[in-house]
Image 1 (cartoon, helix red, strand yellow):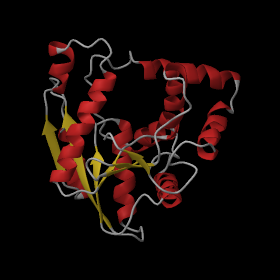
Image 2 (image 1 turned 120 degrees about the vertical axis):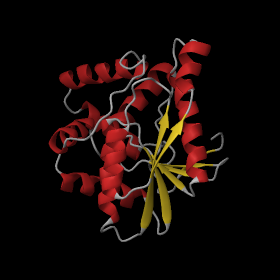
Image 3 (image 1 turned 90 degrees about the vertical axis):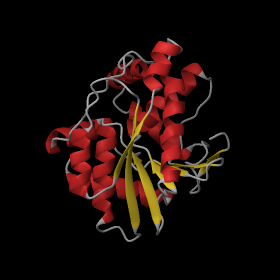
Image 4 (image 1 turned 30 degrees about the horizontal axis):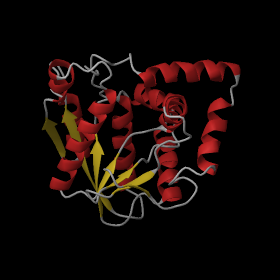
Length: 247
C-alpha cells in the first residue's frame, strides 16, 4: 500500500463517521506493532492537510516484558514531532506470574485500555485512536458469533461514559494485507511482540479460519463487512457514536 492510499482510506473513514473535530487532542495507542505504527503515519500525514485541526499524543503501555525495545518508536515520534509517553506497568507479571492466566487476552486488554485511558486524560486528550483495521472488524464478528452467540463488532467511534473519552478507529477501511504492504514498503520500525500468548489466542484461530473461508469464497470478507455496515450494530448504520457505559 502506498502512502496516498493510506491517507485516502483513513480520511474516508474519518469523514464517513465524523471521527475528528476541530480542536481534538488525540492519544494514539502505540503497541509497537505494524497496525499502530501505520495509524501513526496516517494521522501524522493527515494533520498537514485535513481541514479540521487536531493534535496527536503517542502513548505506549509497556506491559513489563524483558527485551521490549521502544527506541525505534521514540525515534519515529521525534521525527514526526509527535510527543511520546511510555507508561510502565506490571501487567505482564500480573497475568502470567501472579494470576497465571491460561486465557489472558481479555484481562490484558482491559488492563491495557485502563492504563491508556488514564494516561490520555492526564495528558489532556479527549479522544483515543485505536489501530483496528478491516480484518479486525471481520474477525471480531466471527468471535462474537462463535463464542457469544451474537452478531456484533466494535463501532468506528465509541463514547466511554465513565471517562468522557471517545475512542475512534480510523483504519476500519484498511485491510491487514494493505497494512503488511505498507510496513514492507516504508520499513516501519516494528517492535517484536514479547507476549508469551502471541500466536496462541482465539483471535489467531479465527484469523486462520477466515483464510480458509476466503479460499472457498473469495467474497467472504467483503460480504461480511457489508453486513456490518448495513446491519443494526450500534454505531455503524447511523453516524453517531456507540456508548459504552461500562468503560
